[in-house]
Length: 417
Image (cartoon, rainbow, N blue to C red; front, side, top):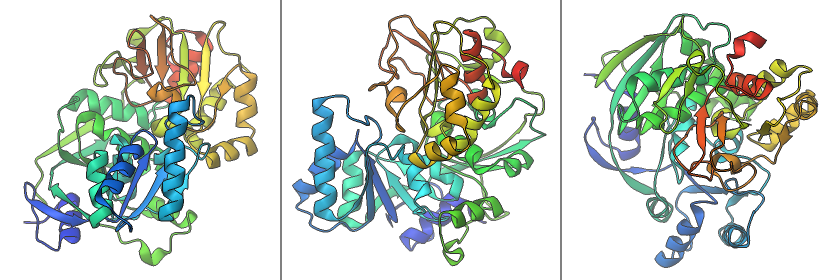
């Protein structure tokens, strides 16, 4: 019997012949923390008396960047001091969101094993890596020993068929899949994505879909490593000889195989207060919205900003609307400036903030008031996610978010395309 991608990668990193359900200690290739989790990582390393890190490591200041408070500034200083002491990389305030700047750095390779002290570390499965989020103490142990323990997950094979309709984007596709599989339908499973729709997606779309596999409970998600992946890595100066794709065997044993045809789906919207509470955009027609947010590790990339600028053209956002935009990295911000996208977005009435996570996690730059309704391109809409448990968060594609910013009501973006 053949193996899945998860079984192969964990076997390679343990030196053992592993199958789903097995436990093993595996070598970790790369690990990282962000400013919401790194303080505990640093404390644990100090408690263990570690002087040398055994795993390639970096930190990213993105969740509260620039610092909105004295307490956060202390955390940032602790991270800067640790980076100097251990000669490790630090992506400081303004560099961008961890799940954008780390792939941009060329550190993530197909077949690698990656741990992040952030739940959306599964994003890097778009590059064929087994990447998953862990707690700060678990990550500190990986830094101290170069290894950690893993239970090999079962795998669900997801095949996405059909052709992509106009006005439909990767965010719509993954929301549709989450609606069908449900928020707990893939708990501690790996997801392998296949099919003609996946083959057509650009890398930005693949990152979007892998990013949200955790929203159905998955431990990791994998996209096929193809010419698009190789070109992305080459653009990040990764030598071609280092790109060693890991693919599933034809006779791999899957926990389940599910197929979806997205040829006729409408733009999708996730409603408060769970991600799998998804409906067609038409079901929410005329729902008044107070704030629109475009950004995050899910949908703050260059293609997302292009979509928003194309829909806005010379239009203005609705009176009374707040439209907040956070590019996912400094590189994305600079590219958007060169293309004239930022000027178009600002002239429409949008507020462009520093690259980072702030509005998504509710630390600053757009916390809603009691009773306010937000439509966001983020990945979560739990109560309090954006900083106020008395607000209501809807999730949608960048196109739907932008169309809604224009009208002030949840709007089908196809009317502007």
